Image (cartoon, rainbow over all chains, first blue to last red; front, side):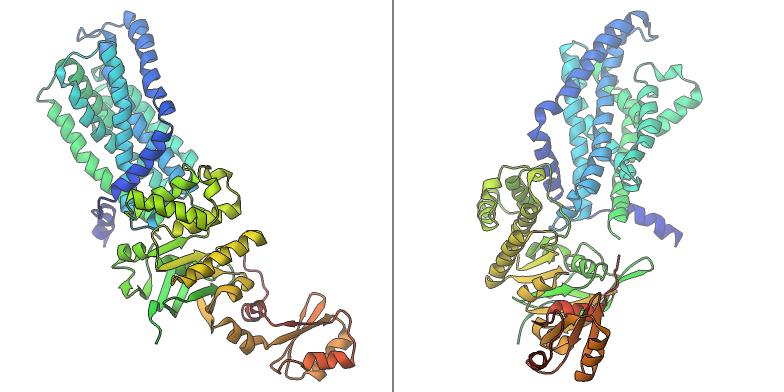
Length: 266
Length: 305
C-alpha cells in the first residue's frame, strides 16, 4: 500500500512528439517579443562584470590566483541558467495553468497533460540555453574564456535548465497561489545564488555548509562545470558533478509531471 | 435505426465525498442535437468533461464512436471539438494565431490550418478581427472565436458547454444560427444550457439533470406536453380567484409565484379562453407552456448556489 503510493509519484509518463507542439507554443510567444526578452541576459552580465569584476575585483585576491573577473564570469553564465528556467516554470507556468487556462485548452486536443508539462519543462530548458548563451557571448566579448571546451556549456545549459525547470514545476504543482513562490525563490534560489561557489570559492564556507550545498544545490554543480569549461578544460572530478545532474534531472522530471497530474486531474 | 455515437452506462463521477454524476445512462445519436439541462451544479459540465476525455470516470462505462474514453482518449479527442464554458483562449496570441496554434495540436498541416482558420473566421464573422489580441474582444466575440476554435479539427462531434451564457440577444442568435448550420452539415451536437429557450430552439432531444441524476428525458415538445400541458393561464394573485380556479380546474396544478397564479392543465387547448370569455380576472393572460415551466416543475424554484 505504502510503496504503491510512493510509486504513483514516479510513474513514467507517456510522451510523444506532441511534447514539441507545446514547446512550439511557448516559443511562438517568446519570439513575438524577442527583442525585450534579450535585454536581461544581455545587460545584466555587463553590469555585473563592470561592477563586481573591475570594481570589486581590485580588492579581491583569490587563493587560486585567478583574476576575480575571470572567476565570476562563468558563475554569471551558470546563474542565468538557473534564473531563466526556474522562473519560467514557476511564475510562467503557473500563469499559463491557473490564470490563462492554457493547459485546459490544450488537453482538450490530442495532446495529453503529461505532454503539456514535458513541453513546458523543455521550454524552460530552452530558455536556459538561450539566456546563458547570450551571457556566454558577453563574457567571450570581454575576453574571459580561455578554453575551447566552452562550447560544451551549450548542452550543459540545457541539462541544468531542465533540472531547474523540473524542480520549479514541482513547486508549481503544490503552490496554493502565485505569492507562495516567494518561499522557494527566497529560501532556495537566493541562498543558492550566494552559496554555490558563485562569487567566492565554496571552500571559504564552513564544511557543513559546503556539504549541504554540494548535496542540495544544483547551482553548485552547474557553476563548477561551467567554470571548468571557461577556465581550465576537462578533468575527472567533473564527472561527479555531471553525474549528480544526470541523476537528479530525470528524478525531478518524472516527479514534477506526476505532481502536476495529481493537481490537475481529479 | 439510428446510430449511437455516445453511450454512457452507469456513469459515475465522485470528487471525494461529493457525487457529481450519479450512475447515469444516456445515448446520443449521430447527427442529432442533444441538450443537457439542469441547474448549476447538476453535473452537466462534469459529464461533458468525461465525454471529451479530460476527466477520468469513477465508475461505469462511456464510449464515443464505439471507443472507450479511458483507453482511446487520444483517438476520441481527434474527432471532438470542444467549446468550454470558461474562456480559455490563449491571451498571448491574436485571434488568427489562436486558431493556427490550436490547429497544430491536432497535427493539421500549416497550409491547411491557414485555409481552415480563414474559413472559420468568416463563418463566425470575425475576419475583421483577425489581428486583434484576445483581451480586446467582447464576450460575444470570444464565444464566437471559441466556437471557431472548436471546429478547427473538423470534428464529427461538437461539445458546447453553455455556449451563449452572458451574451446579448444578437450574439446569442448568431451562435444559434451557426449551431443549426453545423447540425445540417452532419455534426453531432451535444450542448449544456440552463436557458430553456435555447434548448427548445436547438435540441432534438434533451435530458434534465439534477443533483447528478437524470430526472427526465425526451424531446422538448414531449416534455412540455407531459409535464405542463399545452397552455398556461396566468392571473394576478387573489385569494378568491385562487379558490375559484381550483374549483374550475380540479385536475389542474396551480402554482403561486410571487404575485401571480399559474394554472397548468392536461386538458386540450381552449379551456382557458373559454373561462376568460365568461369571467374577467385581473392581469390575465394565456401563454404557451414552455420548457422553462417543465424545468421549474422538475427541479424546483430553490436557488442552488
